[in-house]
Image (cartoon, rainbow, N blue to C red; front, side, top):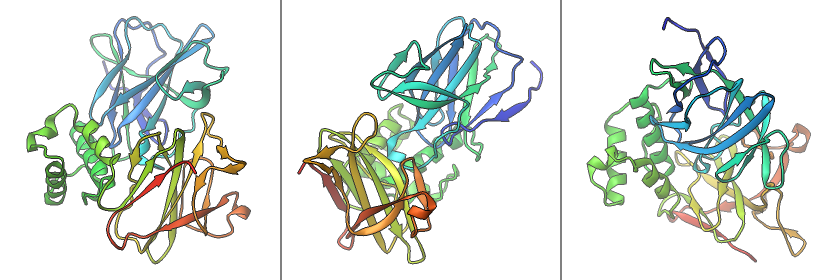
Length: 338
């Protein structure tokens, strides 16, 4: 096969690197997605065939890993993709802007008629992809960042990113190995009583994600003790500006560390319980939320806002955040029913 033109399409703030083909002819192999990003992602695919559109997901794919998402002969007119980072990454990466709006569900799903959402389903933006065909007839599409990591770099950058969120200083997140990354990784492995060769284990990223979701003796931890999904936002004051970021999804019974880097002078927190349609839950006629008196800017979708004040005139919401005292080490905020 000769050299093909490459193009990039924004997908969930993720940039899949895909190779342009002259349409999608029937392929006798499987369709595979490969993750060359520094995020553990979940992917959903859409299949357009004879004016009918179906979706299925979620397929979890670790950095540097590949996963078969369709098996057998593929006769689709179009293949579409939606990808999202796990909730542990909070506001990064940003949501995608796709050309098609199709239905997805919160957990694993198969939706036969995916252009008309039913109860329990939500609309999501999908982007058309044109995967590369391998010599064996299979199709493959690569998810990549602007950094354009190879497989080894994606894995290392993925490790660095989770180390930083877990409170170990492995910055910058660049996929480049060095003493600082190795020291942070060694400290993490020691904290979990794991040997050095565990880095080669297929469960490495699962273990790291679980570590991020456990209460920590350093930094800020949120724990959801309610029966509802909680969406949270964090803000940091570095002495020059206050930056607010959200939303982090915290499932019932789970904990989460927001990715707070450096040593900010102050940290603020806001959280609210939401239903399956992401509407704020009310308890005794009051919104079920946990905040404070400091008014900072937020928006309904994922955000990172560095300029506070005049929230309403800028199309943003003014939200009351609580100040979190980290002067004595780590702080765990537990969200419970009143």
